Image 1 (cartoon, rainbow, N blue to C red):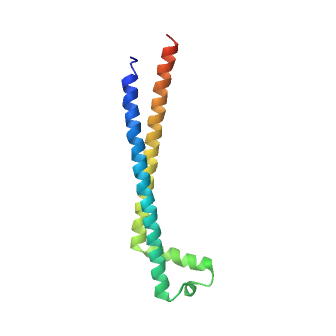
Image 2: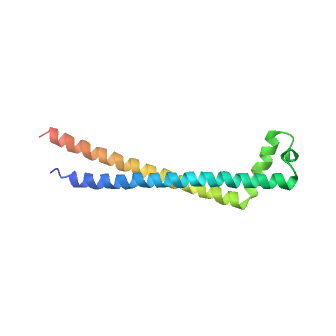
Length: 120
């Protein structure tokens, strides 16, 4: 048995765990995206009701969007969901980097094992 065999198996197992973590965090991020969209709709709908109609927020789509942006920024639930979504995205990207690093490490180990075998 090659001396790197057990280490390669260990790295492969860590890679599996990292990929499962990526899948879990992808789901968490998707949930956070949905919750953010709901919080956005609530904040915007609340403002529309408060002023008595979307047209009263501004004469153009652009001016209404600026008002909505300010309303979302002032809405605590929206900001909390935005932070949750951003943190989920960061954790997801970190997990992807970890999985890629483990994959690279495993590839290097396998290449070293093949090279050593072909030199025999």
